[in-house]
Length: 373
Image (tube, rainbow, N blue to C red; front, side):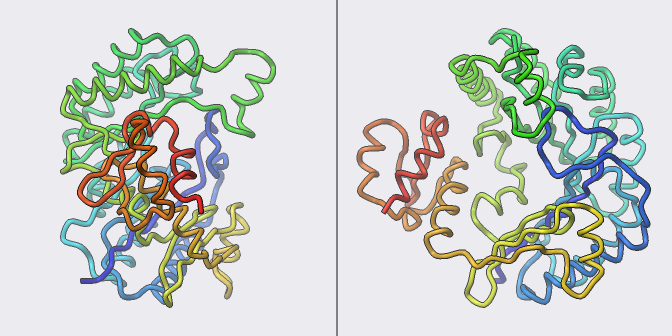
């Protein structure tokens, strides 16, 4: 059986830049649709030349705001990818969308070109929180958009951001319980972090507000696990909750350290080719990426062969994020296992090393211990 392959398509443009966002995003501008379509197709063909012997299991349109992509480009990408590779019977084709009426107007068109999974960036069902987060939709609009999506898609995920300044355990319990009552298929819960170079970093630096106290943020994380578990939405990854039928096939490729190609400005990928693990990084600025993708060199700014030690470290860090854990063979420092078990940070199950809920709170340190030579 061919090894699985996922394709990540990055669309870098947004109507506006959220103050917490540190992704490779730019304010929307007019583009030459024909040239952008051609660039994505050329990049798909370059990936195929590297890894032709794969089964395509997922295509993920992310960003930015990929729901702004012209339908003709989305359609062409899907058509081209599914021509190049054999396609899994259960292929997952996802797109991220804002929960606004203008986005909802595109849902039927998305489904018509093959999108079968929708990820809504709701972020909160509280209007004051949405204003703080710099979102341009209301809680009522988000709810209306979700209900419309529910009538069109059989697989819907949405994101929420918690651990906001001033948020209490009761606040979060009420908001999360209300979100679960909507019965999404998948839920991504992200703690608010202040990232370098964002508007929020500047605001905190000015003293406009401060981050939530760390111990309280940890309590909110633990509360999230308890509420979701009780609702039949277990955490299969640190920030992601779903039943086994609705776990993100695309993201599981990352966490299981399988092959995925990153196409579009700033996208990165991991590909096994010629018995080597290749890390790829695309040009970040849209104009630079477009020119490179249309040229002879292609859109990747860097292609680095990862050493066995680098691969082991990445595989551990990614695999420990998911509840199933990472195969024992991936641990390069097995002598640390007994001590970490005694401290309640890891457990062994089905030939894998898995982080416990306590271990997930210190994941970087855990991975470092297990990979230390």
